[in-house]
Length: 342
Ligand code: AFP
Image 1 (cartoon, rainbow, N blue to C red):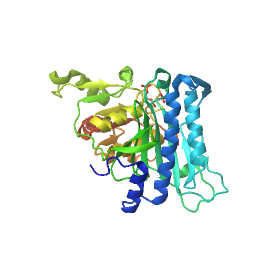
Image 2: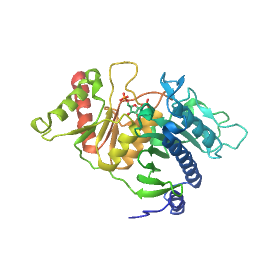
Image 3: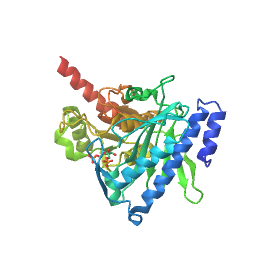
Image 4: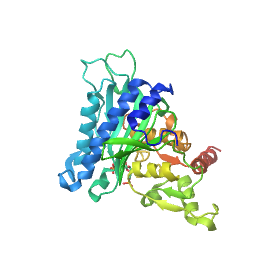
């Protein structure tokens, strides 16, 4: 298999040399992100041995209780990438506002937006968690960076990826030339290419959703899930399996490895919040990975990568994975919208 067994560093250097559109400074930045993820892998592995479990006793901008590892991971990303000559500024799930790099340095060409530790409610119960990152072009010739410079549709991303701190630590990323997965070899501290050019099967029998929210969903989602539950005796004519890990990184990784459909749809619990997942640092990077692997990513009514953000922490409904299954779900949404319009 092409490139199988190469280190991330060798892979990136080849990507730059082969003129596949991977800029040399972006390759360096990806290496810097990978280095932080290595350190977070070792921190999460320590578990209860080094006092990193439990809550920090603080809340983030989302009003969510921060775990100690949330705070640790956020600071590690800010400190490390803040020293990069390629980063103009950052935004994080854990920060209210943007985090410009120190003004005294020549400004880098990239903005990095991240969820430093996704799935953190799983940390204390030793279930896989991860880091999600999105790299956007920084505006040229801007004297002072502002939040509005980050509010770019997901199609503008030049890189998206995640680190999954599971039984093995993996880094999965795309720069627009497909999706490649690397496994951390703890013996040498290198990410090694083990899953080149992932492709998501177009069809699936496996759906992932938090069923406890069922009574709050819109009718199209109710219809879709009901048909999955009716299985071979219902209109779909086939049985489905269900998964829910409550760590988006673990769910998306499963979809990239064996297909599936992952959904966190709109629900009416908090009408002002169209779902739980955040566009800039959860939905958009995952949507780029899924589309680059041949899947599809929708809000139910439009492709996630086409959504124009109007706030750093805005939420969107998320339906992504095996292309034909996503099409099935979105067809129910658009049909309902058309019926309502008539
Ligand atoms: P935490 O980081 O607060 O654990 O949230 C994880 C997450 O954002 C995403 O990774 C999961 O898919 C989703 O929330 C789980 O949401 P529920 O807890 O409502 O199932």
